[in-house]
Length: 178
Image (cartoon, rainbow, N blue to C red; front, side, top):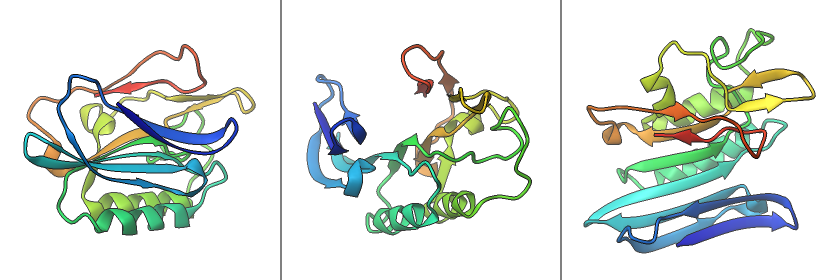
């Protein structure tokens, strides 16, 4: 099963894929403008879950994250899993191969506000609190950064925790598994 949101031919787009043998009921789908957002509210084993995939603007846009925050707040206490390309590091010290920025950007602050207000956890950082690993290679700048995340509701964090960044194969981004 899959659903997607796209903008134009070969420019921007996100998708959510769910394995065929996972029994779920689709309750609501929200597609964001310009192919940057898709949200699906599902029910699995009588429990609701909100799945979100984003592709944030490359140039940074705090309003994108404030609008996302507002949309997420509408779902109340439904557990959330957000994955995607945030195009911004969360930790200025650990998430970049080169330390160039000393102060957080307005976009970085907006993401941290979202994390705090929606009660989300960066699952990879939780499992790897001091590790320096990256999901994106900028060939132009010859730097690595971690800009791809899974943020999940604190209520979904269990006792056993594992999250890994896989090797880049096809894209300039590495997949994250948790």
